[in-house]
Length: 290
Image (cartoon, rainbow, N blue to C red; front, side, top):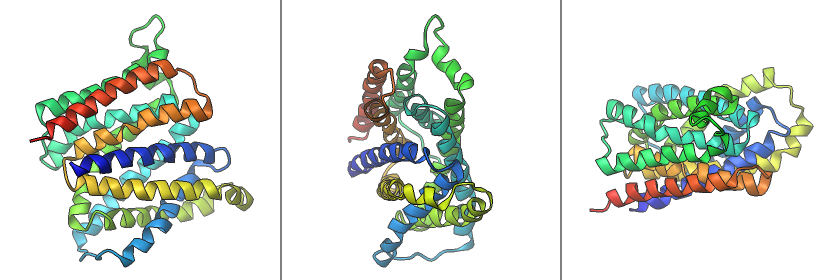
């Protein structure tokens, strides 16, 4: 059950990363922050190469790296655009749709099949995201769902959830072809290489503004390094759907941080949703006990 600890650490780091990213967007543009996600994480990860065994890398590994890296880069760009355009408490919970998509993608890609009780837990977590958005419901029961189409941030985050439901499976295959710690290093190196010319050729953010944002960037890199490492260790121990389901508890944490730090509204319904989501996680966890 050590994978549960790794998964919860992933959720906490993911939430902290959202907070520092939202702060960073006050100065940096989307492309600079996307590069910062990868580059500053890579800075913290590179020293790990001195302590881990570098695996033999064949052509299949590089093909998966390009495919998974491209998908993750697209998801990162959309993610950052989403949290820039809307409140964290409205946008981030939409990521909880990833486990629902994983029910479809994991059997097709990895031949991993969640148990009956695990599926109930996954649906509870996704259902909790509806309750988190009850503030959208006035006279229309479907208003929280319609917010996905009407609001730019949640709509983009829904696409992120879909992309990650595929890339999470590719990540597991990448880990199996290398190691749980080497794969995220390779991933961030790929994104850094791709995004560096994009930023230097297309970004309008001045060097002074980047300097003012350095603390946020370092915090993001540290949180992502710990979070990604925990996630890769967790998915190497259990089904991808279980890990991603618990990771999505970061949405609950981010809602609370959004209320406490950014003074966002709707904390009552957000906490109601959190209770439902925690119930889903308990069902998933208990279903793993044999």
